[in-house]
Length: 77
Image 1 (cartoon, rainbow, N blue to C red):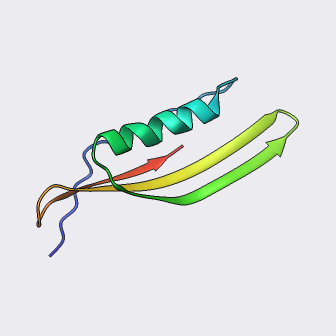
Image 2: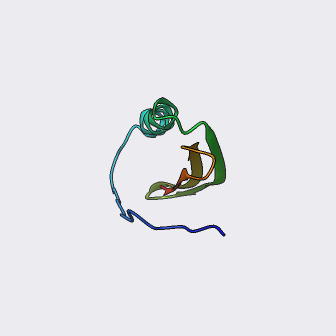
Image 3: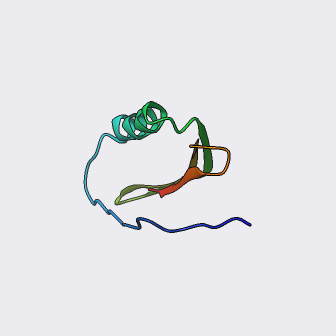
């Protein structure tokens, strides 16, 4: 029987200019450095308007700890 526990749930929003390529690469590299070797991008959506570009991304990252225990991260940004 699989048991899941939500450990952390937080929302961060930013309005303004950001170097999204650097942020995206930083997040990806951090997950790889921490051992989350199974990473899937389940959603990538861009919406361009007069106000700018809205980007929505959903990642699922998995890190096997033992045969019976794993960390699973669901990241939305």
